[in-house]
Each structure stands twice: as C-alpha cells, then as structure tokens.
Image (cartoon, rainbow, N blue to C red; front, top):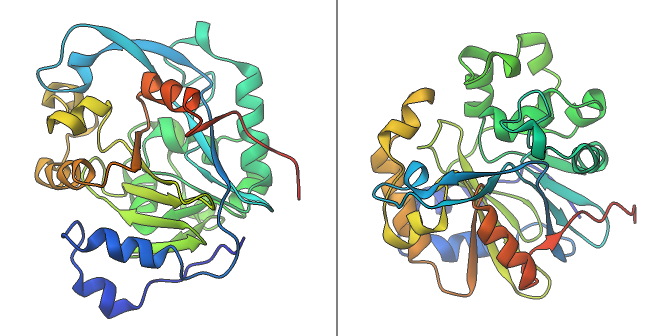
Length: 290
C-alpha cells in the first residue's frame, strides 16, 4: 500500500465538475493512479449502538426507532490498512450502557497501527478518536485532516472537547484538494462540503472489483438517499445547520450511482449489519501486521 497526497492531474480534475455525469469515471480513474495492491476488504466496528427515530434522520420519516451507532472503518490491504473515521469514547458516547470497551480498544489499536487515518468530517463522533486517543502521539503521525476540517477544529468545533490549539494541530498531516484525491490504490477522497465545511466521502475499489462509497453524514439513513429527502432542519440546527443545496447535489449523485456500488451512510447501523451479513463489509478488524 502506498499512501500519499497525490492529486489527480490538476486541470483534468478541475474541469470535470464534482458530481457531474462524468464524475464517477474520474473517481474510478483516480483509484488506479497510485501504484500498489488494491484493498481486500472493508471492516467495521461500532463501539456503541443505540436506537433513534427515522423521523429524526430523514424529513418525513416515520416514528419507527432503528439502530444507529458511531462506527469506524478499516480499509484492509494485503499489507497494512487505512482507517476511515475514529468514532467516540465512553465520555462522549450518548448511551454508556451500550458502549463496548473491547470494541473501543480494538478501534484504537487499529488507529495506532494504521498507515493512514482519515475522517469523513470534523464532528466529534467521527474525529474524537484522532484527538483523544490513548495512543495519541502514534495516531497523530499518520492522521490526515483536510484544511477545512482543521480550520473548524481550531476555530469552532461542535464540541469543546475536540478543540485543537495551533501547537497540537501542527502534529497532524493537513492537505487541501478539490474535488478528489487518491490516497492509495483503490481509495479516493471525494470533497463533499455540506454537512460540515470539511465533509468528504471515501470511494473504495477492492481487489475483487467490489466498489463502495463510505458516505459519512451526507445522509444519516439510507432512505434519505433512496427518497432524496434531507435531514430535518430541526435535527441539524444544534451544529449550525447544513448547506442544503450541496447536500441535495450529493444525495442525487449517490442515488444515481450504478447499483453495483454500495453506499454506506455512517450511522445507519441496520444497513451496516445487513452489509456484514451479505459479506459486503467485514465485522471487526484484521490487525495482523503483514
């Protein structure tokens, strides 16, 4: 695996507007730019699982309560791995009774030993593990934040417990890109401001040919993509609301992806469980060093 900050051919990427009809082809090409082996699996661990109403997550949704959580993902290569999202700790967890210290330990061992760690955005339930890890010095060396993410963490994070000062911020890797950046063979970051200024999605193409998009919080539940319904404004005002025009564009792009591409909203635990049962995702992490 080679992790780097290679941007795809500047002008070519810039001319192909994000989320245009040809954008997927550009992302797929970018996935082949960096030499090395493709990843072999995407693993997932959720330290806490709670229930929440669909109505909270999707405009016009029902009052049915469904499982949700704060997962971390491991993109596993034949040698090494990349982490996507870093979850939360017991102090930040919404429901301490469901919090698993064992799963938390595994997540932080994976963060410590990763080749690279990225987050889909800078909210505390995704980035806390990069800022409050028990292995913080080791994690900081390969934690890759975008300039937009870092700006929010320095100036106005959604939780004071994840606020960074300039001295601490200097210990992280920081990049800026638009609209995409490959970080390893088969792995491409996709800039997606809207939920937050620093939001991004992660495209993954496995050695098997399977394709996934780890969509972060573009939608909180898969039905938001299927029905093209956004989050209720009442549910997002606690963190300042969203750019609804940008989210609408991203939702359309995700819905129009070919059916063979699996879209994974971060907090839809029921969908994640179904994808594990179908062997699209792997439950747990492979931490064997190779």
